Length: 457
Ligand SMILES: Nc1nc2c(ncn2[C@@H]2O[C@H](COP(=O)(O)OP(=O)(O)OP(=O)(O)O)[C@@H](O)[C@H]2O)c(=O)[nH]1
Ligand SMILES: [Mg+2]
Image (cartoon, rainbow, N blue to C red):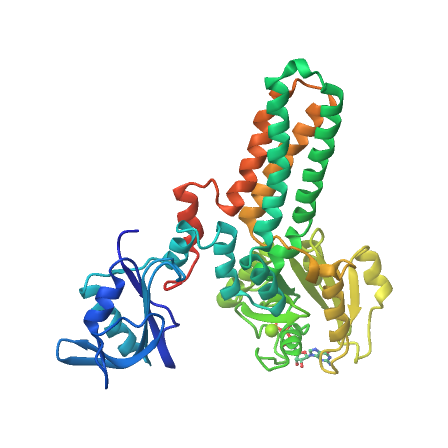
């Protein structure tokens, strides 16, 4: 933390501006040494948090014409001295400016190091720091809203609320242990059970959102599956509303996995079109088929397509077998053509699975498919806006541990186990929750969290 760090904070490429950022004790000094104002003298006073116009210079050489802002601690993102330099947004100006700062004594920042410092200096708690990257990576407005709420401390507040109850439980127990002669045991047990159940239900409520939270954060992994020529790529194009994948009447057109993101009412879908599954001797096609099967393993949702205008083949039955135990929506496609099978036949094979009849060429059934995905996600309750959503797997794991711990505390209380035996589980629960906000956290966990970040944030 004593070192001054620097990085390019904007995406590298061609753009209007590119921002180079620096944080740490020496950043003001280093910044001053490379910046020369145009039309006014810099030496007089350091104008805090004001945009200054000038050149980045290396001795007599002008590197770029820029705007610079100097920000003095502690009211900055990292709570340290910071400098931001707004260069021309080409690859060369930002790179040369960064290199100059490094030569003058700054060190290249690690991914997320600015935010890590913000956390270590108390500007954000850990759940808020984690939300920063989620805000950046949000794929839909809904996932953005959830992350923003977390960034603003929504989750931290809820966790602190639960921890307060736990703390008063711990205090209660300690008093009873210290003054056993007061003998208020009966009441104490009842009160503690009541508090414990409150904790349990608040943790449970958070945990119940984690399924949706994961999908909001990472996207619903959706794989389109079917034998060749049934209309998989046509479906991808239909939901994307653009001609993304090649569609021909030649079976085996798609050879590789094509990945795209779509947004259905705030639900991010990572949708993958795959090679048609069939037995084939063609080496390239076979690789595509293997890849499709690999995708199947990781899928949250499968959209299986069957062409009901043609004979079902061995390949179809193989696919029916593959998706047996998976979350699947079945599409019966090409219903604009005379059909050889009716829905009843499939209803029997896929009892319990949703079946939709479609015609990709006529655009029939796409809305029903989207509705079905929407229903699956929201499971009937649309209160998602007002809910605090758990979208981070680390938080989910800690909440599960906390839930187990408070569960054993409640069980022990019901058995009227001596109060001093409860303290360990109770404290563990308190610590599990503390790890979410980062009150108690190891260096290795921190490193793992911030490694996910981009450089310059
Ligand atoms: N009549 C009719 N033709 C369709 C329908 N859906 C797709 N097709 C046609 O079927 C052929 C194959 O469509 P694709 O979308 O390429 O099929 P695919 O499943 O991706 O095929 P592969 O990539 O070879 O596995 C094309 O000629 C499409 O125009 C439909 O609903 N009705
Ligand atoms: Mg295809």
